[in-house]
Image (cartoon, rainbow, N blue to C red; front, side, top):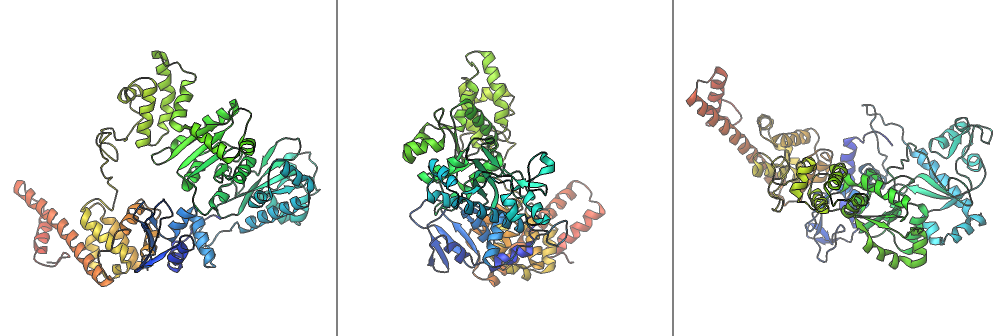
Length: 613
């Protein structure tokens, strides 16, 4: 479904969701005073450090730092993208998610009918499998058991040119929808094929059918494996409004259904590989859909686990696919993530190998998997002799565009060290050779990045725009008060807010915008307020402030504290400007505007704190 979800609907959804009930259905919570606690579901621990606050409608782990709202929990625990998390919460409450399109508030057409059509097709394929001994015999020969067939909802498309078309394409509108989701082909586009006589014919014929499902379990498309000889051996759904092969990973839905989050994902190349691996107990296998691994694939993978193992055949084609995967993986390489490359013996694939040697022996092969950095270096060294200057120059020339694809940070620093080691030079010398372009803002003693200092020094805290700049402590206190007590915005006088808005201090606009928004659109909880900032750069820092203890026990006390903090911010700014004007007056004449400003600021020190005489 396209279109933006209106913010008022998200506000309402968050306010109507009980975060304790939501999380409690997935994590065993125990009451502890006014809050609830448990062992954190996002990292291993024996002593509970995961807390859920009904008042804030917010969760926080003091161990690993995970925190967020009910929507954030669904995104982290169920590995859902934001729109799907909204859909999930809405479905719990029996609500339909509205969408905005074209700058209006009119909901745009949904795709529910397309999802329903694909679900119907999947059911028909399963029914066809259950009454086709030939398909069942083929699945048995390939080593699939009944539990795996059920888990992955495997079906069968009959050999007819119009079997599905007859059942689901009963009128022209239905046939057009079948075309839209890629289940039929229009004869006029392909030419010369037999058809049902109305211009369409079934795309999938005489194939074992593998439904491809999204994070919510909805069928997006299919992969079909021919039963006998024929080309192509595997046939995928085409690109449709719902299905994009460069984004989806087959088996990811099934991985997410496990009770505990996987420690790793293994990316293989085939549907059958995934099913056989899961059947053997390696329940963290997924597959790309007839395409190279893309950055979008990896973004989705790293939402689920911090380690990814690429598994390829050991032949020339497998190594070529691995090198393409490496190139696409480099933008996602960063500290806290691990990517490794495993090559199987030539002539073997995961399907056959795990069937013959079992899960334990297969997993033992992971010890041979090459880390991304090592595979990159070995790949470059394979065809380059770096024992002489010409070879070293060629190595650097080929390494530079690869290194440029890696985002700045500790991982690129370490990769730079490994590349330098490969040709026997220091990292500094390597940087000189490549012209320094490989490490902008990477923190090697420069001052142009997010952090400064020597490479081995303890990193200094990042300056985050908005919230933590300016008069950090006082401003942070004010924002914390609003985050924990959103209702107090209504108690701040309009004149006080106006004076605050005039301050030219970093971070003040965040507080002003927060107050103005809450005056116009009150929020009932910390979670509701935070969700309004989700798409803004300050969101993460605001979330961190929300995890801190409240500075006041009640709304009334918080309102008094906030008013005093705002007064101090205004006073500090006014005093700084007064000092600047007095200093200038000692060195030069002030113009009339500056004289008026000096008089107002001097009067303000003994008069109206908001600018009166």
